[in-house]
Image (cartoon, rainbow, N blue to C red; front, side):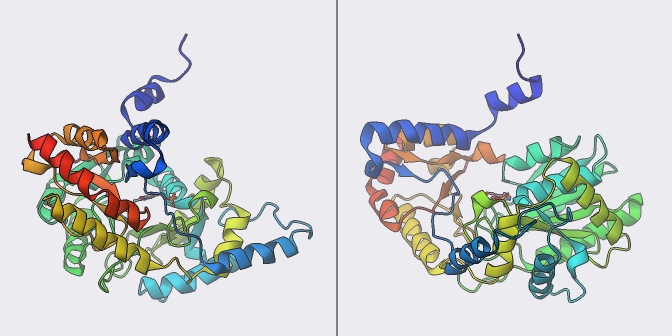
Length: 400
Ligand SMILES: Cc1ncc(COP(=O)(O)O)c(C=O)c1O
């Protein structure tokens, strides 16, 4: 008897490395104890939400006895929250025209990307994406009849391969999906790279007569180091859309609140926003959670303590240096994407060697980029420091 569709059965069998590592971690922790397992597999922000979230919850509780306190609302989300967010994003994106009518609040960035792809993809359309990439992208695009077309980044910098993207553009291209700061590389695309990408997309749009959307997924925008700046996409390209969330910035990952912001310069902006409002509804999200939205309205602009992540980044860099593992220093987010020692493409082999030392990492193949592996450093600093000797032993064992 077939319980699942072939597609879903296939996804379960072949997809999630992160999930496999998560399950391996539970077994290892039972066997060796919590403190003796170094779990860098999950990008689950471990810092407490800022105080404004707890204060906001108390305020929401005080209002909870009113009728419709948590009732149905416009599918785009509460107007006052969209107004607050629009003012914030107008500054962040250097786009003063951005207003509440250009924003749809969604169930996280994940819900936003699904609503967007549902709204714009025709069957067989392609979405180009630099690799390595957040593995869920492939599912989100396929959910709506499209195909993800990865283009490998330059492996020495993890910058955009603009020639590769240019060569991948074709009549079927509906969108280019970028993520900066990037999961899993921690890199931030520069102004120059974004300008060149915009020029490429403008020329392609002129050639084929159908706009290619530039979708910028930015849930880590708030988390950059050494005063790095994340250049905005909206002023650079008319058919641009920003997707974001508060999962990481306010440590609200379980509360599912994010947004899609459509460039007001797009002539058909209200048609696209109307499409998003509909798809948010008919995908069954209906609207972003009421409590999450209200919290956002009160806590926007606050954030978790970035200094904690910065110290962890330095500690992880030292562990990798000491183990002679090479990497490109992350400029943002909380991930390293180092190279497998010896320059091998055998990332699963090395991740298995790490696992023998109770270190949990995710192979680059899981992000469409064999030869690297991802370490999420949203774990206490002492776990990072204590893992140092285990990394050295794993490298020695792997290189023999
Ligand atoms: C690059 C990237 N995009 C989107 C998401 C989804 O985030 P959200 O919790 O906002 O749906 C994640 C989550 O880890 C991510 O890393």
